[in-house]
Length: 277
Image (cartoon, rainbow, N blue to C red; front, side):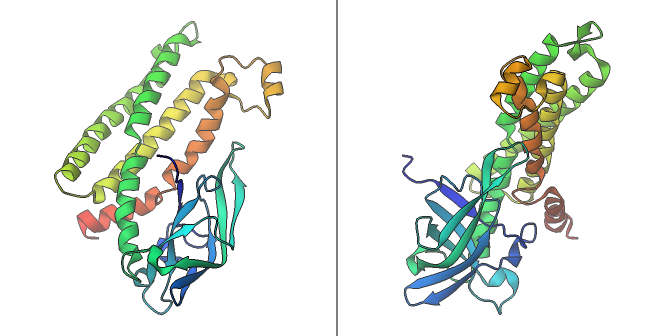
């Protein structure tokens, strides 16, 4: 019902693609853990009232075996949120610092030192979602509509051979990914769970979304320029209201192939799970 807004506390300055290298510690003190450390790239953490975190509860164990999964109230004393302003100028992500934050042991999910299992399970669903099939289908229709209206050399951009070829390629890739996504959903509905398929969807989906934002920006041409503020945008008459956001979306979408586990890491996961390499 909207009373709770959760954010995710996985990545750290030295633990992004190598997530098992998390250094944020949680030391047991009676019925509480005392948490110290830092998380980064915390999306919309400035709005959240709860954060689910990977914390190290055993510094002597192997990396994946010494991690626990904690639920932390963002209003707890010792929690500090600092903004990170992204390339297009938005406050979307944050750093979160924990200084002697007391978290009830009852807020641990699963067994102590077994949080890596929870994280892996959640990440398969996150990566399936990051593919963004619905977002890409909507973006494809917008690009098609714009390309039919915009002209180049006196003819619709949709008839430009280079632009049309790129658009056709991404439409084919999207249709293939949609089918794969439906297969994964059907398997989950039948009691399964996403495996290497989630990594495939994450790679293909993010590349498709990036290509569509690039095509949208190309279709808008000079009207897609980033404006420092509304006054400048109005003074330069940038065209349709959504035109200025095309460049911002393009820059923001650079992150898609990095978050949720970089695409390079996803290729490693596929190699291990399917090819046994």
